Amino acid sequence: MPPTKAPDSLSFPVRRRCPFAPPPEYERLRAEEPVAKVRLPTGGTAWLVTRYDDVRTVLSGSAFSADGTRPGFPRLFPGQEQILQRPPFIRMDPPQHGFYRRMLIQEFTLKRVKTLRPGIQATVDRLLDELLARTPPVDLVDAFALPVPSLVICQLLGVPYDDHEYFQSQSRIAASGTSTAEQFASALGGLRAYMDELITRKQRNPGDDLLSKLVTEQLEPAGELRREDLLMMCLMLLHAGHETTANMISLGTMALLEHPDQLAALRSDPELLPDAIEELLRYLSIADFVTTRIAAEDTRLSGTEIRAGDGVIALLAAADWDPEVFGEPDRLDIHRGDRRHLAFGYGVHQCLGQNLARMELEIVFSTLFARIPTLRLAVPVDELSYKHGTLLYGVHELPVTW
Ligand code: HEM
Image (cartoon, rainbow, N blue to C red; front, side):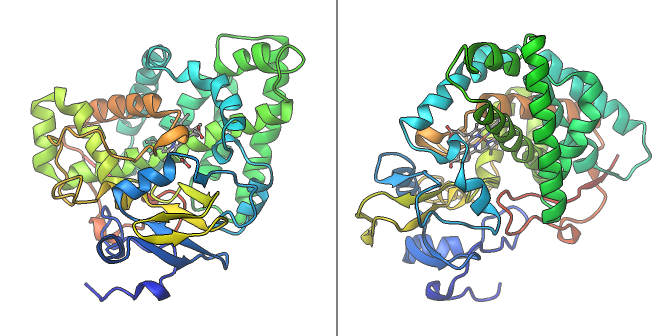
């Protein structure tokens, strides 16, 4: 392995070298410089936090703020500026954050999410029917991993069936991580206009779905939610729930196929599936640096002084591979039975959609490996292309055969 750079010259994001493991630099930083200053691609600097306990400290408590409008909030990509000018509630602090989160929380409880199960199972079955009707190799990302979460969000929001194709094609462009800035902006503009019109339709003719509920109960004048904020909420749900789950489906499949002993153990004991999913979430930690914050006051972390206004990135993959918490973190072990991972974040912003994501992954993996027992990769993992440096880690294409 090539020598890693000295921390003072480290640019962020750092590339992963092995398709699954976090960048090797994290290990060294965790041991030698657990709070390290790095250069961001947008020109500023931020503190990288790599120890499990420190990451939890950053994500809980009031010393660190998620308010994206604060001057100095870390910007990782050009264009983020625009979103952060009027951010969705993932980039707000309490009490404003709670005002919006509370409107959605009932819709993401385990009980409520369970009502979506038959619909998700039907979607997964249909997509696998279509996939099996094709001649392999087939790209699993395009044929399965991206459409599953997109169709689940359609179901959740109440997107009419006739509009699925348009909705899916635009959200696929917005979520693929490969689109140009123009393609992304145009897809987002299309989805925004579509959502705006859908809100009007739900106002006239509400159904039994999340959007109808928000429109009838929360939207002005009956409630306190402005139309613009409702639009932003829908786009955030779409974004937060689409590429995340899609990347977990494709990389999770790949990780199981590359660890045949683990896959065999799972096949022989399907009861292990919930633990296997927790372990895959930990092992892959695909939302590694989604968790950006800004120091709200002067504070110290692992002996390093952080000044109010400094940008901070709490690295989830570094925390989830901290050997102080997870023994032999580089081993994918579906028997680990440890749910302390931070793949869904921690604190008030901990993933709102985690019950839904877990259920989608359970249905996906149980159905995929049962229906295609001979599933295998059509291309060696080191020949695949990965989403390096994008906000969510993943694989661009995953050709599979059976
Ligand atoms: C927040 C990861 C799926 C909706 C978060 C955060 C992480 C995360 C790390 C915290 C961000 C922060 O603290 O700055 C994931 C992963 C997923 C997933 C790994 C899939 C495996 C979903 C799904 C939905 C969703 C399916 C909904 C459809 C949200 C929302 C927030 C959030 C609304 C913001 C919560 C808040 O600020 O209160 N997610 N997510 N996520 N996620 Fe997820």
